[in-house]
Length: 200
Image (tube, helix red, strand yellow):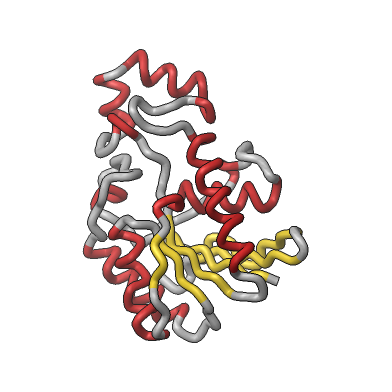
């Protein structure tokens, strides 16, 4: 069995301002720093074999204390990053609607298939994340793996493991600092903990 502990990074400045930050870096906010201490305290007694993050500072910062406490080196994976919002990185949806009204309507119309200008579609990010996840799972049989990543990435992972499809992406609520735990046995996945923020 493989156990996956999925942690969404702590609250960032962009999160607080409802700004799209996929591939751009966004600093953890003051509230987020408090969340990190609580996440670390909650997870410190968990048995963990490996810790993966993205290359974004917000994911590395979220589990840095935990990795040091447990003497586990962080493994960074570019492929686990959030969707790339391309030209819309750093903007709010309201700003996009005001500045690019036709593009905004196109976004609503195409949904999963909409590709952000010079960025990705949700399907692109799903395929990227799932390919990396398969590699991680195949390398980590009978281990407990912590992955600290992003809301979109975690939704991609859950919907892939549960349904082998991106179509349930938006059915999962993933809050900042939340912990979701899945157990995978012979290709069958069970969610044992979902979007837990009770410790924050």
